Length: 129
View 1 (cartoon, rainbow, N blue to C red):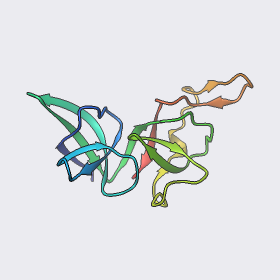
View 2: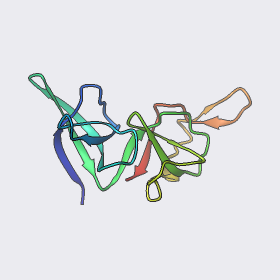
View 3: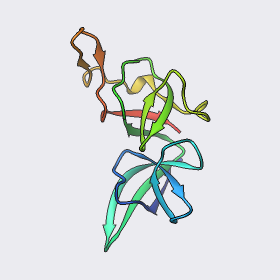
């Protein structure tokens, strides 16, 4: 079952980013770590001067890469500015959060100057939260 809620978000949040709750401001903002509950924004609507996001919890979600992805078999995920990357030293708490290998679409891959495939930052990949 998918859990999607319409929640007040910061104005710098975009689709396909990971958000966490900021209790000081009573608003959801771009996640920078695994602290607290995490969700993925799957749609944005503005009503007056308030921005809301349709935030998904507890599912496989598409999230934008924050860095180029060169590890095509997937791996443990790290978070920065609401986007994801694979790190050799993943963030604390990432034991159950992954960039899934099935999300790597080789048609989206680009080739670097040495002929190696990579997915550029900004490309959407599936993650499990």
